[in-house]
Length: 375
Image (spheres, rainbow, N blue to C red):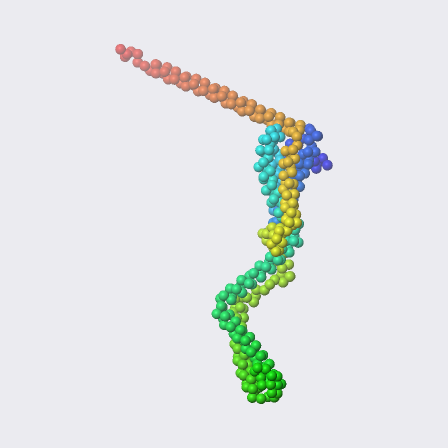
C-alpha cells in the first residue's frame, strides 16, 4: 500500500521527500495522483481504440493501437501532471484562478478528445444501425442519379419509346373495345353501333377484319418496342447501371463493421437526430452527458488543487523555493564579488607589470644617452 501511495504521489507531481514529512497532506495528493493516473489510462484506451479503427483491416492494427495508445496516454498523463503541479498555492486566490484558467481550458479540450472514442464504443450498436441507413440511402441516391443522367443522355430514345408505349396502350384499349362490340353483334346485343341481329353477318365480318388489321399493327409496334427496350438495356449495361444495386443486409453489415473513424464519428453526431430529421433528445442528452463526464474528470485534479486549502506541504514547498532562490541570489552575488576581485587583481597586476616595463626602458635609454656631446 505504501508503494501504491508513493506511486500516486509521483503522479500528482508532489515532492515526495517533503510530502513524507506531513501525513495530513498525503491523502489529498494520493487522490490527485490517482485521478491523474486514471485520466491517462482512459486516454490510452481512447487513443488506442481510435487508432485501431484507423488501421482496421491491417494485420498490424492491434500493434499500432497498443503503441499509439501507450504514447497518447503517457502524453496526457505528463500534461495533466504538469498542469496540477504548476499551480502555485502560495499565490492569492485571484492569481491562482488566473494561473488555472488556461489549464482548465486545456483540460476541457483534452477531456473532449478523450471522450469521443469512448463514446463511439458505448454507442457502437446504434452507430452501426445509423451507418447502414446512411449507406443504403447513399446507394439509392447514387442509383437515382445514374438513372437520371442516363435518361438525360438518351432523352430522344426515351421520348420515342414512351411515345410507342402510349400508342401501344391506345391500340390495346381500342382492340379490346372492338372485340366487345364484335361479341355484341354476334350474340345479338342491340347498341348504337350493333344491329341487334344474332349471327355472323357483314358487320361482324368487317369488324373482325379491322380487329385483325389493328392486331397486326399492335404486334409490329410491340416488336419495335422490344427492339427499343433491348437497345436501352444494352446501353444501361454498357454504362454500368445494371451493376449498381441496393446493398443486401449482409453487405450492409460488412460495410458497417469496417467503417472508419470518420464515418463512425459522423454517425455518432447523427444519433442526436432521428432518421426523419427530428431531434432525438434522449440520445442527445446521453451523448452530451458522457462527454461532460470525461471533461469534468479531466478538470477534477485542477479543481481539487484549487479548492484545497494551503497546507503545511505547500508552506514547506514555498519556503524551500524561497530558500533556493535566496541561495541562488547569494551564489550570484558571490560569483559577482569573486569576478570583481579577480578583475581588480588582474588590473593591478597588469598595471604593475607595465609600469616596470616602462621604467626599465627608461633606464636603458639613460644608459645609452651621450652626455658628453650635450651642449
